[in-house]
Length: 427
Image (cartoon, rainbow, N blue to C red; front, side, top):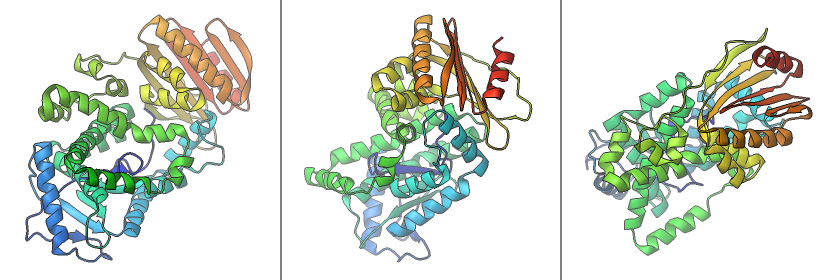
């Protein structure tokens, strides 16, 4: 799945638009509380509240901390600055530039969009707390020395991350998957991690009084979401996917065999976003179909990325450009895919995706949806159409070809390069 690049490799965050969730920690009474250099040491009542939430989280999640979690309490301003700094350090300018070129070509962001600025502003606004998988720190904001119900929920979520990372060591695996460009697997595994923490916080919230629940709801409604609201839907949906669909998936597993079954997900995790959408497919062990692209690379270009687009990314792109019903109907027939992102090092890219459907009927539906997407989104005019074939050229270039259960989807920002590419691959 196309990765929404931000500090997701470093940070496992809880976004305000999702739930305002949190994590709990185990701090012994005499344990020092780590704080940022500009924060005031938390008073004893706050430490006691954190201890209590730690014990509650252990009880709900049915695991015990191996070592006390490192809780860092900061102000709201410090939290935003820490997130901003981590994201800026994590983003690779070349990756971000390639993503901009691709998403503009697909009509999913505007030509003037600066993705680095968007990611930085978006995460700085949305993060209500985070677990840093590299340092093991749980960073959460505090106000006047007392934790609000929303902050308590945030602690329960984030400390679930700390707890499960101590037991299952997921942070290193996330980094390995990212470095290997296995973004679809990373998206599925992140959905397990966030779904686990979201389920735990949901169970915690369900144990609270009605007044506490209403306080959380009221506080969540007051959170500023202006940047998120202005963000293109494609990015919104991929950002929310681990929390919303991930929570549904983990809850479905938990309902079958409790947290023991959830624990097993960390060693035998789903590998596709399709399995996250459809837990039954995961439970019966349905693997994705193998797909391979070609080796041809146009002169002056290099392969900058090879990965899997995945069902979640297809749903998100079709949902933004077309409608939810069409997006879901086309995406559910996903059997497997592989894409290559070719880049000339400057302002031109070629996106080459090979797709295989579950059936010929699913392939036809995906082809028709891709055709509708291309006609609406690609900057050009239809220059060639035939049974199972569409070509659009103009400012950009795109081809969609159906061949049995397989589809080839090519987009190029240089039409001349695109035409030569298609002639080479699809004679």
